Length: 158
Ligand code: SF4
Image (cartoon, rainbow, N blue to C red; front, side, top):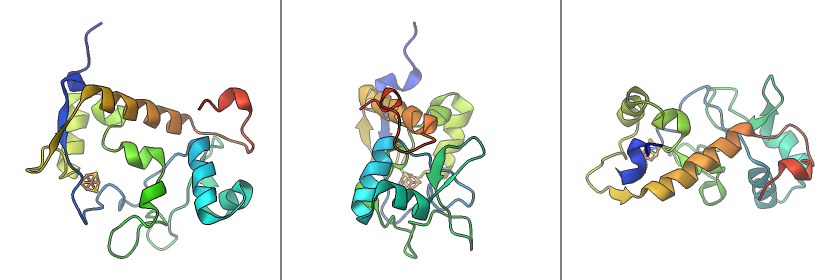
């Protein structure tokens, strides 16, 4: 099978004080079970209480981060366009721009590049294909998500 185009690596460096990937109204951040556990621990809450406070469920029942009522943007993006939970952020946020949907076609990648100044930036470093692959898998796990807590063990693969 032919290796995907990005296996040779892609130049990328996230740009300080950018935040463009997080400030889109209506953006959806899917959560993995590990995300829920880590973010609840960070908030000092039992997972059920954290889910109740900081998430909502999609029409098909998957837990996603809440958005602000005022502008539809993630509740964790602060007024300086910085992520207030950066160190423990969900793996789908960590995986950007290496989402399967962004890498799927040249057109999708072109659109991603137009919205993310970190791709091929002057200070960008080469991100190797294996690292990108791990991000693609992480994004896939998050997109599958979970619909109940505790998550049945057969569905929570660490
Ligand atoms: S849009 Fe790109 S450069 Fe900007 S914060 Fe997101 S990942 Fe970083």
